[in-house]
Length: 374
Image 1 (cartoon, one colour):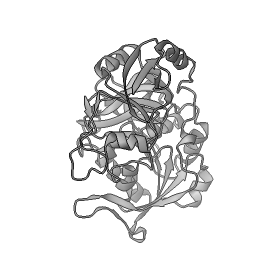
Image 2 (tube, helix red, strand yellow):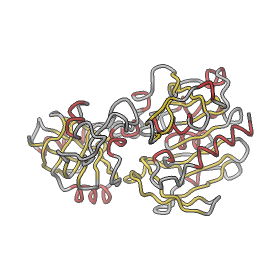
Image 3 (tube, rainbow, N blue to C red):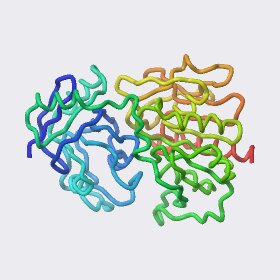
Image 4 (cartoon, rainbow, N blue to C red):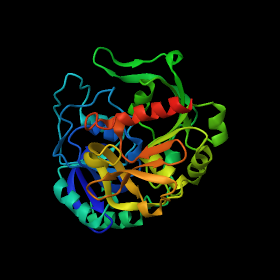
């Protein structure tokens, strides 16, 4: 079946339908990871986005029930050069196409993804549309131009959990897979804000002796403190941190009362709560090969990232906040630490293990911080 991808600036690509038939809009972005497509599909941070994979063949090791970061895919659409119809892996349970169909994801394959990515790098990430219904590119371009962008929208409320819940699953064990950890053995009580949280973040916490309570994004500081946590975790999530005033105010109230660790959107929200501001990147950082310099350790970490906004270093008060990490590709802020209160954050994803263990120390640092203030 024919499918068309059209961008708001007038560029369009004609390919073949993958997944279900239909029509979807979203911000067209790209991810440079060679593997991990299942984790990308199920990462809530991609909510509202049409994700293009730069690696030419996607789906070659199939799909399984275990390697998911949330209950379902959250992206708006998926773009690949070629999907593999015959995956080869002992853990594979279905093909990429079958998984996309199962989860009602409109996708496209057979286009020149290299040309698309080069165009996005030049013109910037922008609204696009994938359609198998309307084959007129000019009609689709107009629809893309009329669709809302991501700036100024609160996408977190669309992906956060409805009620608090406990998470007990630990990290992957070659002998037994993902095993549940008895919460009675936990040494630390952690409240994790679900702005679009990934399961492997939670696994890293539980495996380090944390009893984790995941709470909705709009949970107040008073409600958090009633749970008597030893630490608070601020999760990743989709879109623009600017309109999330409720989260910014809550974090500002919690500063100094409990140790705080933030990742990705959580990093941006902590920075705003400390007086900083954010801005939209031209095409963002999405992939498993981003080099980050850790000023404190004088080491370079190879990191996984997924974000379209960044913290403006010039807006951070140097008397309150210190920049601890920078991106070596474009010098953007990748980490901060509060100079008075026990709080720190990073823009990248230590749980995604691209190094594979370059950034695992950050979870240990959070544990040490909680131990010190316990």
